[in-house]
Length: 279
Length: 299
Image 1 (cartoon, helix red, strand yellow):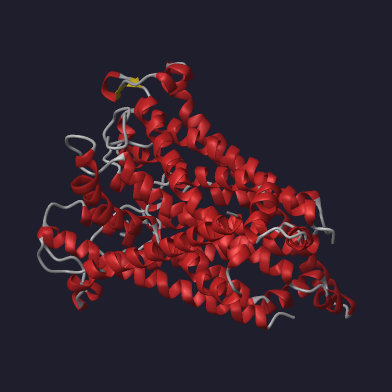
Image 2 (tube, chains in turn blue, green):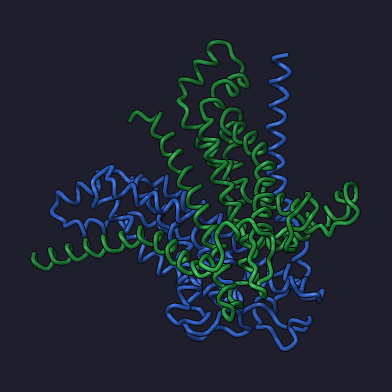
């Protein structure tokens, strides 16, 4: 009886692990199967032509570049804001400081805030500041979304850093600011991992840019012009009754999935390199 | 020279402190601004009426959130019902049974599942789950279903919260001291008995925390849900009814409704409700998880 129960649950466990693996293969398989036939070079390199949304020629370059611009801008914002914060709570505040713990706690909470709430808040903020749906609006809102991810991930690698390097630097007469600059350089692989994670989350999110970035068939040429994004272009194309347009939505979904896969593997690669080189 | 270094150091310290304080205050700023944006509608109608009325007729000024709230609850409950058994079994397997190689192979699976964007889940759900329900599952139970249902939403959401659930569960299991597990095994308990009597019992609060965290993730999911749930304003009566969760309501209508202040305010109330519930859920589970970590670490 004991033996049967043991085997039964072990089989059940392996089964559920296999189901989860199967679901992943199923999802990626579906996207590849549906997307690959419609994926052409034009999809990647052309703007939507006239009649694109009726199935005529063109591509989603506007959305690809829009997504790249938005994520690049928001990354700059997020990096500039999150590195100082992580350095401050790890090296300026005493160990187990209450303030540092409150900060970590609030990053955890911010991390859990759904993207639609950031989207709604971002839009309200833009209305208040008088900004229209634009590249800038998208950048600000996506930065809010990815900042908690960056901070949490950076904080984690910073805490793994041994205390010897900072102590050595300080005892050699460096000021704290100089010490932090050296440590930031030392943390580069960790920063890269955090950035890759943040890109992955930011580039695929639709709810944040839905109201804040707008949508356009052109490549944005100023911070104030609206910007298309890849997830939204998938979403809009899928809503079309025309079959060609729907097929292109699947091709766009394939593009986005491939980007995410590359980012995910790159992040793994960097984080494993980091743990090997840990000082 | 020394003087400049000292000034640089001081300035940097102040800037860092400033940014750090801003980061903490940010959470409160979001909450307050959503609240003030939602205030006009709460002045028009009592919160209780808004939450318990099922009448949603924006052009007549009726804003009853009940259909959206029940939709959100049903879809999330279904998602956790599907995801929890799978996640528990897989988590236990990874923690107590699987070899290091298998765990290492499985880690990317979890990473990828958590990395796939919501819109891709939506595409997948509408391509596979929705037709499956419409053509093969629903006909056995109801006369007609479009497939865009509570059921479809629940399945897609379940897959989406799985990675979070599994990784937190494994972490919770890991926080149990190895000595306890060894002691149980040494006394002649089988692996499974050890899992049942030691690991699961010891990690009960952690499992609850993981569930609460995942449910709050499910509450806020937007685009995927929007694509598979059907978006019909009604209180769903069974798994094969279409539903319209709160985030989908915001996503579908917000931005265009600036011309109607009370409508905009009502949607802001929806965002505020989501925000408050999710923040509270997150806070509860994070505090629980931190305490679990502390309980067993002696260093």
